[in-house]
Length: 562
Image (cartoon, rainbow, N blue to C red; front, side, top):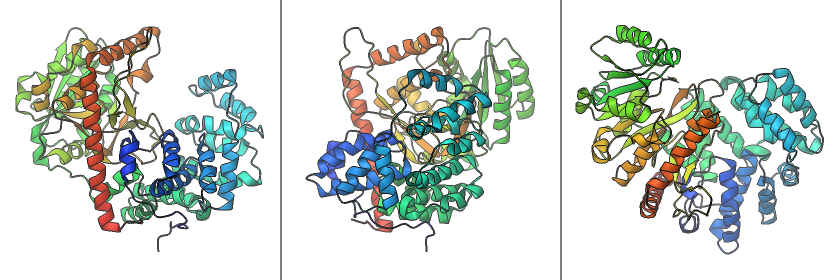
């Protein structure tokens, strides 16, 4: 018997219904974050007035959303609506739904600004003093807990979010919610073997769906794949409409291929750096420890004035001069030109894949084999990327797959900057819950660690120098590759640890922010309405075809509860 089974109170529901495709422009993009669910729920409930299938999906999504994100704004309201439509749920959870629906959210702009500043410092005593004030308020404490919770987990200091839970004035109605948040804390902050008993201790009548998911993911992290897969399969049979869960479970039954060592002859590893010698040294050390087979490494010292030259020389001694090459430029030419320089080297002509690495990452041993595996026999993929996370626990997400909202670009209002390339960033700096460990085609992947198909470069050209010094040059190249019929592939089962964050996150000064905004303007004005409409349409068709194929496989294997 599955230890993480739960009461089957939800009505049977088909995993994909025509209404999902017809009425929801973004269903296929994913639903790994609470705002994705609350964006879909209003439409599902409206359609459910006349469509029994949508009504069943609405009840399931409301129940899942409340259990997975119990403090998220609007989630309680939709839970209450589901109960009013006939959802059978535990009395304790029904009371928590009402509590959530009436939860005051932080409105004090000065307090909000204070927290924003504190969360980016490392002053434990000031943080705890602030939390004591806002969390102990019986009326507002739970609302503040939701506002600060993700920041607290991101800090990587487990004692602080644990202390925060004890500061909230939990009444009897809210005690099951405290237990749920303690399990959330354990899931993100404790070693998996210590987190599992806390998750298992939750009442399955109240939190059964999330309990099954969190336990399944924790078991996977412990290497107990069979048990983890069983828990997730049982959950999928109840909420088979969940896009991320469907994709994740499919990969558990059909693990993406791992390339053999011979395939590494098709790859050349490229890295460039400017004045980050110590970070580069750590990156190259992790590269040396990884299995790169017969791939050669080509590096570019991009006008560095620190000790980058010494770091590269030492690396060449470790790798051997026959497989490690150093190019040196007298000035920093920026990221697009550095990438183009490396791809133009004569030795790259024989390579099928150029593997670009940032100079501040930590590579797992099998990174190259896992990126090459799914595309060994494919020439139609323009780039291959993976999940990018922070470098220290709890390994918060920096990026997953990028896709377009399939809506024509809106006309820019007078006096406003255009915002025409509407990307769906489906993890948005969230905690890594495991919901993005899937493989699927996509519009673009992070340039932090990715393969570029040299055939796509032949079709579309290299990286656009207009994006110098950096920002959006890799996205722009992926857009051109998609227009040439070569989309990207996301291999989310592979995680790369990234020391620093995205260009937007690193921008601190007005000059840096202006540079990012300027490059975004270039991106938004480069493509015609027709090109962007076509990209959105084709991206949508690819994602739906992938989802339907994988859903069909799971239905055939496990049966369909509808």
